[in-house]
Image (cartoon, rainbow over all chains, first blue to last red; front, side):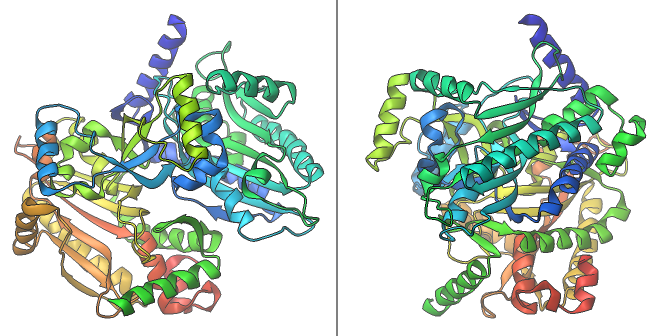
Length: 306
Length: 306
């Protein structure tokens, strides 16, 4: 593993030195330069070029979701270790002085922080399902939503492609099983086409999510056996361990059940989503085409609108 | 106060009903529609039209900052009650089962969450100062940074203009006292010009921040007396209590001292920033020109590029 860690560190150092990423003193938490963001916007442009003609509803969520929404989503059941909850100070003047005293002494000052009603979004689409359910029973053609969210996952890593805060651009489909499955098939082809047009090498494989604990082992097995999630993998810091840059998910009626999301006939909705990890794709482009956008192949820049 | 609360509730209900905001079950936490985001982008466009020619460094930070950065910034000293810290699960399989059990029984499940190294950004510019300091002593002409960040403040409210998660677009100036003060004067004029060109009524006044506790009273007095912060206020839900939509801040050497940020001569840098609250300006536009962008005055749409 030493070589992989070295490769992560070397690429991160290269990105920091070039000013594309800006250190914030925490593994996985970085500022981005203007050029980095231009590439991020370029990936969104490429995604929109393919996806916009489908006429999705556009929803944009803040980086948080309601704590009650997180509870209801089921995410804590499978992957509690990645979740971030937001806590805040609710003490007195005296408590405040004790907090400042602890900070000055370099001690832990967060013991008194209390839970707020806000948690951080674990994936871009978690705000979509309750929003759709609140509209009542869907029309015959179901629902299609375009969403883009800053997400949080607590997995500090020196791998620049494993950030704690990152953005996902998604299309989310809800409707019958057939509608959800067709959507995923369509986007698996589109995803390969888009990433191919960016001049990146890739592979598509069944995913293996880091579900937690004993229950997690069962979830991971069923995810694999039922091929609920595919990932499009691009080598970034390693050819042997490529990075999942796009995911194609079919959730069966998991969210339909969690939110009582109903199709036109009153059955529980099935859902699917395609998620583009825009920071990971940005890093893949920087890795394969170089750190200066101006030197990238013209064909690639055209796809990105750069 | 009842009438003000009624006005807040009425405007929020109107926005939710029109689909411009999407409920997430928490006061101050909302999804945004595609149209809402078009206006947000329009305000950024208007800001860029005026600010880009200055040639700022572009930095884009995630919605979080390092907890150590937050400690060093001094924000916890003045305004601890608004800060969000991010906590996460770090327990065993058994702890996880207890957590799920608590969720199912509707009990608090967050007691076991432990502090991470990540906090939420209280303002857009908090990532900028340590990033500048890391570069070493500044050049003669100081530094100018363009920043745009999703911020968090724990102040649940039914006032749609007081969100818990919202974006600030800022220019940040660092250099000599003269450079910082001139920048602020320049942007006070520009701010009035931009907001005026959007057809919004406004006033500029000395700010009155909600600093915490006894120390806070002293800070508030000095902020007023030294006119460290001006706000551009637009009536949104109330004429008597207009909403601060843009702020013009001169920090003296507060951040220079916190981060040992040095001018070319080795003196502690003075800093200033101008921050546009893009959600608040969006809400002001919706309030004054109507909920349908198509019906807005052409002059206003031109400024926004819409």
